[in-house]
Amino acid sequence: MDELRERIRRDGRDLGRGILKVDGFINHQVDPALMMSVGEELARRFRPLAPTKVLTAEVSGVAPAFTTALALGVPLVYARKTRPVTMPMAVFVTRAPSHTKGGVTELMVSPEYLGPEDRVVIIDDFLATGSTIGALASLVSIARATLVGVGAAIEKGFERGRQEASALGVPIEAVVTIASMEGGDFVFA
Image (cartoon, rainbow, N blue to C red):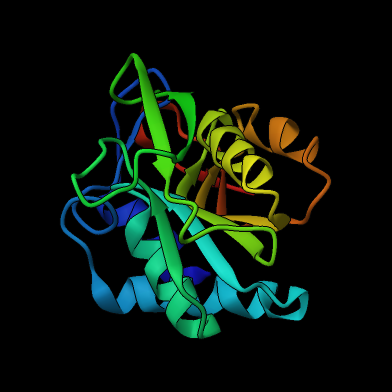
């Protein structure tokens, strides 16, 4: 998608160690028009799989997941990192390492919102190491739901995320794939 590629070239920053700063338009300050385009593109690719839910992790994945769910006409469920008092005590829970924050985070979903009847597409802002996608896929499995696809706004093709996610046996889609980003020179696949 040319619009996202151009925005990454213009406003993205390579912070080193494989970290791409896009918080000015994707995951801190959000460009709604750009995210609508991303969501519509991901929805176009996943619509034939008849998903009934979109799943992501709070917070950074919410914008592309929300617009994808909106375009598909299905609910968005986001895995929480902390349990609010309104969440039941019995939840689906897993752990995921965070590349940008360091450490390990718990992800939890209420069984009220994810179950065996659901066909789930996982959407995140990035497909990088695959650890968040793997953790979300684990939640889908624990809920006995059916995973039908994995998508991301941006794939870092130079990391192992696609290889990790391919073990899930579902289609993997990225709106754009960055082959390399040495010194801020973004090369797209």
